[in-house]
Image 1 (tube, rainbow, N blue to C red):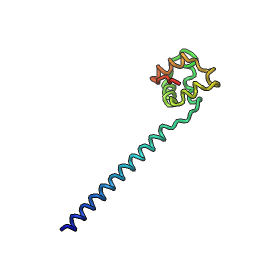
Image 2: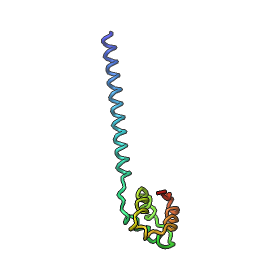
Image 3: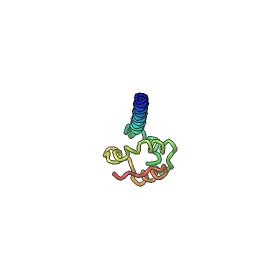
Image 4: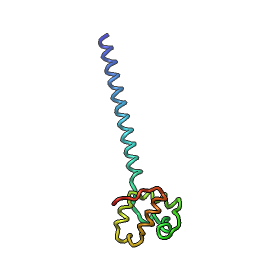
Length: 107
């Protein structure tokens, strides 16, 4: 009977190990997927749909807001780029960001 108890204890311990491994594997997959989806290619031309809203007083389009949200991690990089600064009116850019619900970055 003691041998039977040992067998069940070992079986239970092995099942717990397997479940811990499965949980860890799922977490790794979820984190990897999050990292891939968070990777953004910083390409200023992606903000072309916002050009008229930033250079004039026209409201931003849905596409503009979508691209602005997508490129949000890149905004400081764009604002610091001397080649792009001459095309950006800071007041209008803030207005477009506010209209799209994108916080203005503090760079």
